[in-house]
Amino acid sequence: MAQQYTEALVNRFLRYVAIPSESVPKAKVVPSSEGQWNVAKLVAEELKAMGLQEIDIDEHACVTAYLPGNVEGAPVVGFSAHMDTVPVGLSDVVHPQVIHYEGGDVCLNAEKDLWIRVAEHPELNAYVGQDIIFTDGTSVLGADNKAGLANIMQALEILIKENRPHGDIRVAFVPDEEIGLFGSKALDLEKFKVDFAYTVDGAERGEVVIETFNAGEVRIEIDGVTAHPISAKGVMVNPLLVATDIMSHFDRLDTPEHTEGREGYFWFKTIQSTPRHATLNLNIRDFDLTQYEARKQFVRDVIKFEQVRHPKAKIEAHMEDVYGNISSFLGEDRTAIEVIYEALDELGIKAITKPMRGGTDGSALSARGLVTPNYFTGAHNFHASAEFLPIPSFTDSLAMTLKMVELLAKKRK
Ligand SMILES: [Zn+2]
Image (cartoon, rainbow, N blue to C red; front, side, top):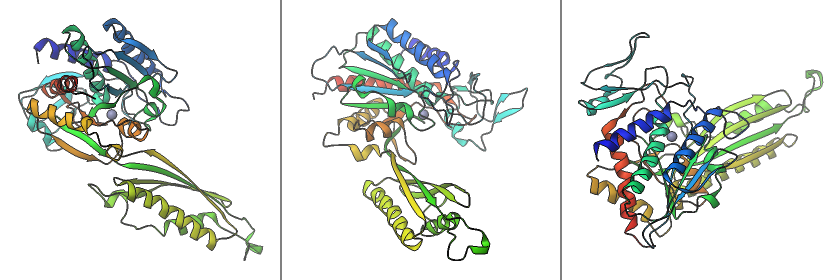
């Protein structure tokens, strides 16, 4: 990659992280914060200056645009990134710094005595001798996902400037990924009509995510019967105890804290109760779609059983699929996945394929019928003040986008 492109990429990234855009949990609107509008407007302006077509910012601040292809018959590819940064109780303002890493612990902030220690972050050892973008220890870096945003934007600029061959390309930049994939759920797919898409929202160099959880949320509402203890016998139905009766059916080891790799789980997240009414919230996660459906059925069966046991209670379960495993939605055509590995191969980057114990915008889009795998930005330690982005890895992530576009231009639908 030419040096000037690395510089342009880094400057672009710094321009985007300078805009505070944390999402706000439990906001009633999408986007959940004003900052995301600011990112959307800046990006839309830049797309316009580059000469993209059909540039649109919708009422949820989803930005979409179209770059018509200059080769015939290639698949239409989409690229997507999210504009929010994660709210984890750190500062919303990012003060990035580029440090030439010589090894050892790094002082991020002398005044506040904030360090990133090799003992806690041995992954640093792989980057000795490189320029790395760090935080000042008071915020996340926001490489999640502004490194992805910068990557896609820089790739577009290079494609246009150098008139490189490419098929039709569409982009979608969405808000509020971090608080529930709300942007990708709200995205109007009519404005993002592609054969398949990619998110550039992965971590270390080489990381590929084609498997995520299938995820469901269950809210169980239990109406009990109140009574004074004087006359409670045979009358009172305590919804709190009905809730614990329900929970007692579940395997105590089938939980996040006892599972790893490709294992699924049930996670009872919250319980609220008065003497009259209880609400129980449960998350269901499984990589395997059949197992996931079986878990949902298990919840229904438990509730049916407990309803019979407590006929005077009223138990209702509200179940919602929140996102799906990307790989469950792959059809016969494996082009979307194959081209990732072809590109890694050609670039000499070792693939690190991980089943992700979570979801990405791609999981929401895949569940909506649009296959959307995810690949790396090059960064480490998302959602923490120890987040850092080695510039050579970041450059490789841009090279990856360009290589995939190049390979896709040679494919025929
Ligand atoms: Zn992200």
